[in-house]
Length: 440
Ligand SMILES: Cc1ncc(COP(=O)(O)O)c(C=O)c1O
Image 1 (cartoon, rainbow, N blue to C red):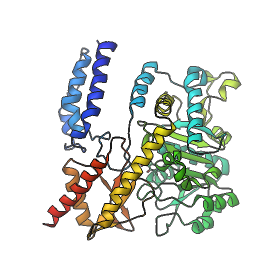
Image 2: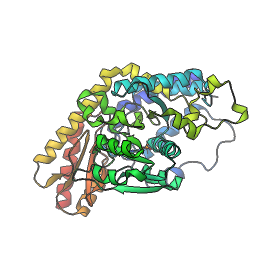
Image 3: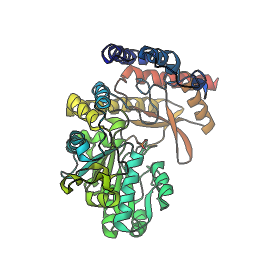
Image 4: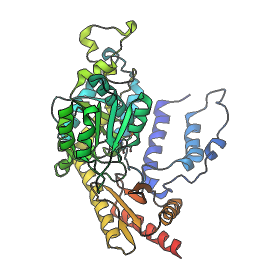
């Protein structure tokens, strides 16, 4: 038996203690593939066990196999944070367990979703009146946008840059659509003139604001011009960088985004909200509804209600109460808290960038647009790959890599709310120490 009060107190205590000490744990899980599975029983227990046993095994069996995304020195891929209001809201969402298959099965979750998407749009400086809903991931949001674009245009070509996220390749493969990748300029931005040449065949052109490797920003105004001329749908993938638009000084990167047909921003990347919470807006909700609405008899309700069911705007029928955690985040951090989080991450990344720039034997590999620094040791790819393996194995930091201009580069992504100047300094020291050790 599980007692919500007693076991709940223990679980919350576990969560609070974990967040206090996560910085002392090795960031990257120090286990081999299969090791965690081998420590777990092959079958579920016959009789129910106390919840305390679950907490005990979480500590003893699972924790060694956790890579700590909440660690202040997590710098890999895009660092993310699950902040306290969202952690608590997830507990409450699971308690309510609403499933919004239709408006009437969860009016509050459906309507709150609309409200928090409107609030976030206003915080990011987006046009008023766009229709917004939440998908699980940016992969699904972009897939949904491509489906709506194909429905609206009757064409089957997707156009994106060679730096666009692999979710576009995957969507093209799943949908059996053609994919054309436009080359990028010196600083990894989609070439607008090449885009214009192919756009008249395109169902959708996908521009990225904050590419995965270098966080470069495609020239959205020129791409929007090409789409407008050719009747192609413009989808903007701002999964990572969109959150930075809460700060007016970064809005240069959203120039032209008001002309997009759809836009994705992941709240679960840089907006203090845990996965999954991908925000998808569209200026053309009717096209989404035409693409996705499919109501079997058993789900028919009066028309006025039908129009409000968010399951008609995307692939999933059952939709969980994701809006609750975003609502909690927006209310408990406020615009100022979100701005402070973005500004602090960018300032720390800028500091790290200065150190790399000033150090002989190291080089910067891309202009830094937001909170990601791409850099490398001068010399071979192998040297940099060895450094990455060695520094991650040490457990003090976790960074990832990318390939830019055919070269292996290291990436340090700041985005964890617990990261301080001291953590950045330790990252730089660990890298220099390991580089010296490898040279010796
Ligand atoms: C620019 C961009 N788009 C899409 C994605 C995919 O995000 P998700 O994991 O939410 O599908 C990523 C992942 O990092 C990304 O960087």
